[in-house]
Length: 497
Image 1 (cartoon, rainbow, N blue to C red):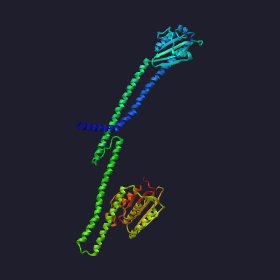
Image 2 (cartoon, rainbow, N blue to C red; image 1 turned 45 degrees about the vertical axis):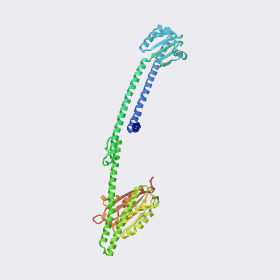
Image 3 (tube, rainbow, N blue to C red; image 1 turned 180 degrees about the horizontal axis):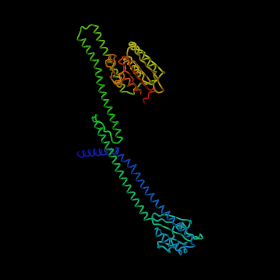
Image 4 (cartoon, one colour; image 1 turned 90 degrees about the vertical axis):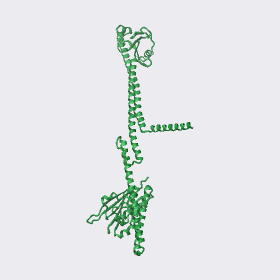
């Protein structure tokens, strides 16, 4: 039994180690390190190998060319003599011996029988030499150069002719490349050492960068973990690398927006509670009054019951508006789209609202600049038009006017609702689309408003990828009319994907 427990713990430790290793290999720091190694160290190593290879070849090619040129020069000089004996008698061989000693060359001159008549090293004079390069030179009649890497010898051969153009022998010139190869090897070693130092430096630098990035990420993660644990008032420190700074700013903006949303929800719940409680309080007071006075006259009783019915209607209105908002919040893309004649829609709404306008002698005017057909949710757009025109009627003076206009271009249609009523003060205009916000609470209660209408209107417009704007001038103290203008811009073709 203990052995099985030990085995289980060992397996857990092993799996835990593998998980850590897997996370490390997938980490940002490790990838930075690998990328730097690939894009810096690998090219440096390849360049070093190529440089060494081409450097050695260039040195060899240069030596082959130089020895071949010197061989050709001596061969050309021999054309001034009738024979090899004449050249030796004139002291030319002594010149070649001195030249070879100074330039670390070995010069051998062979007669037509391949017998060595001159060896500047003095080893093979008088011997017969059958040499491949010499045979090729005699056979082709031209100079031949070769480099034997195994023997580290650069060798050149050329046929010798006299002043009559007759072949008199062959010259072999060679240079031992041992010292040069040793120098090349030294250069290779130094170059490799420098490459290794550069690679190690780059590796250290890559590790340092990865460590710095990882440290900054770890600090960010700790801050995010604290926020996720409930410390929502905390904010990420802005600074450091540009990417981290941008991330911190955007993350803080998200937190700020979430905080504002929480405050808005708290305020919304508070407002909902207050708005729902107010009608209930009124109903309770009216009912208690009736119960406390059993002998209440029928007229008063009837009046109280009418007030109770009005408060119930008001309560139902608030609940219906709240349900509309909830439905739209939970299904933003849930639109029953169809192509609708907007002109007819507005005319129907205005016809339905004409009796309300007539009670205050308000003139309703509809200006249709062109026929408009758009892909919209007919019920929701009807709600928008109804709310805007009904508000323009309710919050207007007697004998006022409400002017509704409709226009369109190739992409959008534009609805404009204008009235000359009370107007909206500038400080209130930015809040009119908030839920339960009322410019004049007393006047709103008189007109039966819930404070949710414009919020619903804005939500519907946004669902259609549209825009709504407000311009208003309040009534002047001198008695001048105010002005309120709502403009709505909605695409003719719905763009929701």
